[in-house]
Length: 339
Image (cartoon, rainbow, N blue to C red):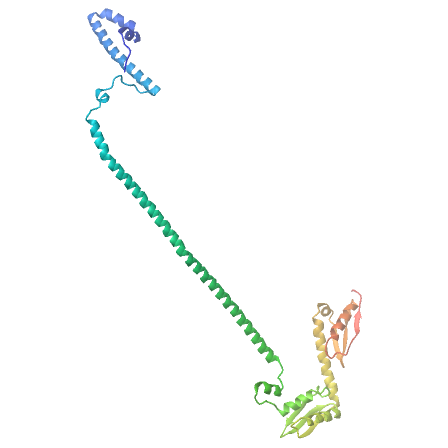
């Protein structure tokens, strides 16, 4: 580093107390001069240090490092024996570098091989997994198909059971078939009775149907007992029984009773009136009127009070649909104004 020369004048010039110091030296004599010289030496050192610090600051600010004017001889002139040694060392280092390069390439090749093996393994695993997945899907589809078939079979079984149950109920509700038909179907001997055959024949006649006629059979002999309105019904009953196969003779113990027809007619009227009342009760409008219902010889008699004549017509229409009703009389129904 090159520093600027520093003289005593500059050092003295930098002192702020120069005037006071000069006066002290003149008064002190030789001692004062000695002190002054020490002061100069100290000032010289301080000035050199300040100059050096300033140069370092300038070098840092400019970003350029100070260069020495002269390089050492060791740097300028390399040793003659150092070149062969360096070449020898380079030769020794070259195989190592090549070995290191080969090792790196080998490691890369091994890593590449492992990556390829890993990729192949993954592809193989995917290929192996695909049949398993397809097999699993097929198994699930097969299971669903089996479940569907089972559900359909179950539904068919339930429907078949319902049909069979319905057929049994209908079969049970059906009237008993003739003995001859049963014999043809089953091939077994029919179960018949002469007593039942006679009763069925008497109930098939419209004139005798309303009456209770008792029948007894004793060794192909039929005995009839009970009440009928007239001799006509008594004679007709005997004629019907005589025509039945298996009957050799008929003992007719039926008793003519003129009052029986009236009694039967009264029972029939009571039944008709009861049915008409039930029919009217099904309608809230007719039920609210509260018709009084009677029946005589099949003629229904209605009585009551209503504001609307159409209600009386509705009641007559309802009674007309009852079996056994011969007519509907509404003369007892009063059409009244609103109270």
